[in-house]
Length: 259
Image 1 (cartoon, one colour):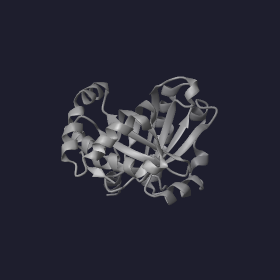
Image 2 (tube, helix red, strand yellow; image 1 turned 120 degrees about the vertical axis):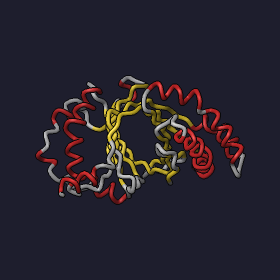
Image 3 (tube, helix red, strand yellow; image 1 turned 30 degrees about the horizontal axis):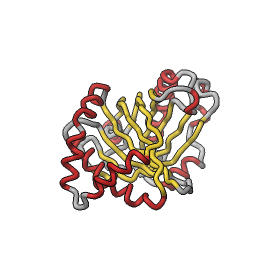
Image 4 (cartoon, one colour; image 1 turned 90 degrees about the vertical axis):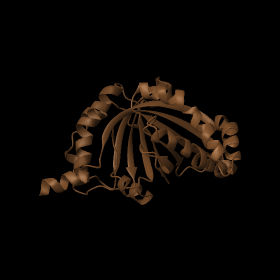
């Protein structure tokens, strides 16, 4: 009976590998409302259609937390199963932009999106997630922490994360000893080079900002018994940056729009 109970708890946690394209934006503070409306009302509906038709695995838009500046930072991302599906998606997704534009209550949102989108872009990354452990469907991941570092061997970094940290994290979930609800490890496959500061990342998912801060400021149960040396020696300089993102809107693999 106990084993059955644990299976029910852990079944919603799906681990998978996937390609992710991520865009980085800088938006003037007086344009954030219209930018977010464009992403929610136009891009999200476009990506919903793409997901429902099997072109993409998901999409999302997030806003950086805790950094006061004249330009607010955002990211958007699209996930694909493999490179063939990525190529197929980019060859087909354009028609959904035009279809959705005609269905908007405020058509000028799409005009604004086309006009402004490119001017906001400050960079993009192509990532390969060696593992992503999703939260159960009834758990809403509202905040994500991106932990960035430069590894001397990115592929082995992911391998060691999966071998050491992943089972440890699963055990914390099983024992209800963590507020973190999802986890992933990825390699940055483009652009490459040391001048970018990082080439691997892990992502931690949380339901609330309080959960993020509580986790950051507390000791993880059992961490002292864990041998992290195989991971730390592959990233000897530690974290390059750790960024908290608020997830504003996303589309899941079924095409559901979630805010």
